[in-house]
Amino acid sequence: MSFPFHRLRRLRNNNSIRKMVQETRLSPDDLIYPMIVTFGKGVKKKIPSMPGCFQMSVDETVKEAQKAHKLGIPAVLLFGIPERKDTRASGAYSDKGVVQKAIKTIKNKIPELVVITDVCLCEYMSHGHCGIVKNGKILNDPSLELLAKEALSHARAGADMVAPSDMMDGRVVVIRDTLDAHGFEDMPIMSYAAKYASAFYSPFREAAESEPAFGDRRSYQMDPPNRREALREVALDIEEGADIVMVKPAMCYLDIISDIKESFDVPVAAYNVSGEYSMVKAAAIKGWIDEKKIVMEMLTSIKRAGADLIITYFAIDAVKQL
Image 1 (cartoon, helix red, strand yellow):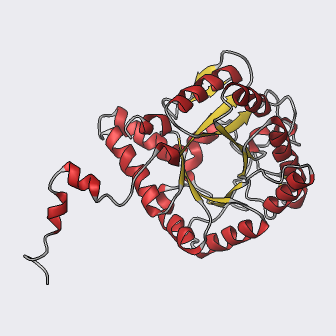
Image 2 (cartoon, rainbow, N blue to C red; image 1 turned 90 degrees about the vertical axis):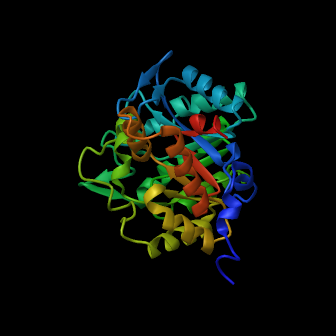
Image 3 (cartoon, rainbow, N blue to C red; image 1 turned 180 degrees about the horizontal axis):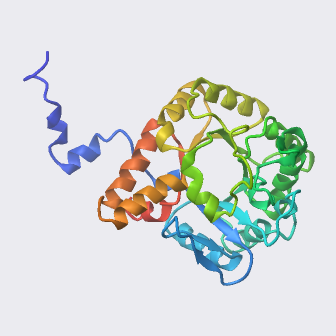
């Protein structure tokens, strides 16, 4: 039977009924708050292309982490900007690096907060690429040792999880082997498994001061037209020891999130990236959209597509609405 026996509007009559039959629910537990740590003290520098976001010194990062924790956000994701960059990304794995200091301080002040660290070399390289460069080429295998050293330094500083974002082939297994060999076999790895070479990263590259000095990242990040290839990337990362796999960006890649969720029995994360954030902020400043409603609709769509975890600069704003 169909109409008039069946009327789907019956379950949309009022807000209470709509909430009772709601299929997708967002929770603070779904959210991870990304933060950019820089050198210095008392630094809270506005990022022009990301209104409401800042480069923060360790002391300010801790204050922001405390705010997130009090609101019920369970985890933060840390990125670092070193005082000096070089061609070996030495600031990435220095015991005195900004991320290492931030990990120790946050875990000392807020031990219950899950601290996840981005493992990549681009912010620390003078040329801005995610690996070692020779004769204009980004080298895969020689870069793996540096990535493993960075992950190990984060583990030693007290990180709860590492998240390699470089997209070098084989980096998950090298990081897994290195962590295990040094007694960190219980350290989870959240791999940026399907990270696309996206134009949506532009604001973050300003924020993290990681714009490549030459060329682009298309030789190692995924090509946006490719869908099936994402499943191969994820399968390899899981085989190499990834505990959580991530899709980045989120909004234009909801099909990829859905495919991965349907194909693999592991937690799936999605990164609601800087460009997605900045477009909403810019339109809201112009008065063209209702920011609060748009943010909740965006995050709900990411969760509905299959993401178990959502990394978003909107985390603090969103959790106030939940």
